[in-house]
Image (cartoon, rainbow, N blue to C red; front, side):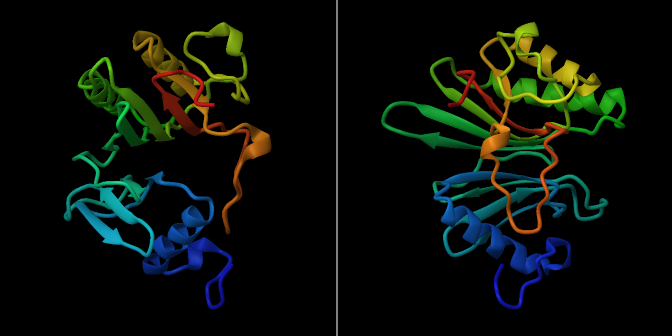
Length: 215
C-alpha cells in the first residue's frame, strides 16, 4: 500500500480511492476498466494522473445505491444509466463497444431484473453487425461450471452451481447468440488489489464478448 493510506479500502477517503485505482491500473498497463456500485449521484467525470473516471448514478434526491463507472485512458463514454454505461472505442480495424454493467442481485424483484435485461437488450440491438461488444461488470449471477451444458453461450472458467440469475443470464446470451459469458479471469490468473478479497465461489465478475472466449 502507500504511506498514509490504510490497507482497508473501507477506511480510505472517497477522494483517494480513485487515485489508488488509477495507480493500480497504470501498474498493470490497463487502458479501460469497469466499476460497479460507485454510489455517486447523477453523472460526472474526474481526471486522475493516468485515467479519467466517468460515472453514472441515480438522481441527486435519490438514495445513492448502485451506480456504474468506467476508467479510461482512451476516450469519454457514451450516456448511460445507474446500471449500464458504455464507451465506443474506434480503431483502424473495427469499432468496439465497451459496457460497464451492474445487474440486480438475486434478492431483487423479477420486475427489476427484467428492466435491466430489457435495457441491456436495447443497447445490444443498437450495435451494428460489424462492430464488437465487450460487456464488463458484476452481473450477480452464477452460471456454474458445466460448460458443455451451454457450449454456445458459456465460457470455460465458471465455478460453483447455476442459480436463478445465472439462468436468466444464459437465456439472454442464448437469445443473443453472438454474446458469450465467461468469468473475467481463470482462478489462477486473478489479480488481487489492496484491501480486496476475491470470493472465487461466487463467480460474479464477468467479461462478455461478442466473439465468445476473450483469450
